[in-house]
Image (cartoon, rainbow, N blue to C red):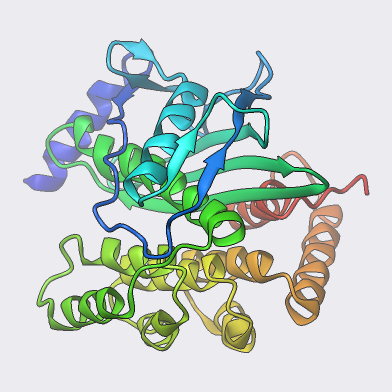
Amino acid sequence: MKRLCVAIIVLFALSGCSIVTKVNRPADSSNAYINSDNNFDYTFKSDIKPEHEYSVSEMPIPVIIKDGKEELDAADVFKESIKSELTARGFTVDDASTKNTVTFKDYQVISNRVSGFSPMVTLTFARVDVVSGDQHHSYKSFVKRAKVPVWSMNELNEPCYSEPLSLSIKTIAAQINRDFLHGKLPDEKVAELVAHIDQSQTIGSTYLDVYELGFSNNKTAIPALKKYTQNKHEYIRLAAISALGTLQDESSVAMLINIHKDSNMWQDRAMAIKSLIDINNTEAKSYVDSLYQTLMTKKSKLKDPKRIPKELRWNILLLEKYGNYSSEA
């Protein structure tokens, strides 16, 4: 009966002109950093071209992302939310200064659904660049989500669109802190988060605590994160794999390569590549460089270059959007 309801809902949705999803603006983090007496002064600007699409549908109908009643203005969301998130972490923020430049470069959600009985899969990418003097840092995020709606397409709003937007902003803010502000969560808070994760009987929102370990800028979180990469719950695994990249933990490179080689889950392999790109030491870069060449060779051998298998297409997309790889290089 439930599967029949899903099919009817999807048939109804597909008979319309589009799928409309409404995102919630991110809530600020509740955990302040210690050693957070630094100021972050900057000017925010957007480098998004008019033709850029925040939402790309790999289905016959488009997906429209709205912020309230209006279509999403991601540049405005990132501008306000990065400032708000850094302030919540304990920093003094001035976004009317010319000391540093924060440039919004990319936000895009890829939506894919094969049938009425399959999940809606979203791949969310974001990028913000920070220039300070002669330093140029590129900060990115990648979040994969999937959900089968049961009664309404509105069930997709939070897990597939709002939450990835929030995680994108928190990830980028954590990277700015890591490189410029150097605040961190106290050891006691890290231990508290780990204990809460270990004691949780259900998945719930526990995986968000795993992401918080990655945002902690505290290396004491790494042993727990390595353990969570083997968790039976997908979202905990993905959060842990991603967090090791956010923390740029070079001791995890061999493990991440093994996850990419051995996992039978595409999302685990993809997140391992994301974190190898984050770490970007010699071993990680060599592995990812070789992978990109392998993928492009596979693509070149396709009989019909316009019909690229989904996994190959997504792998190339990940490397080109997150890793700045290019077939023209």
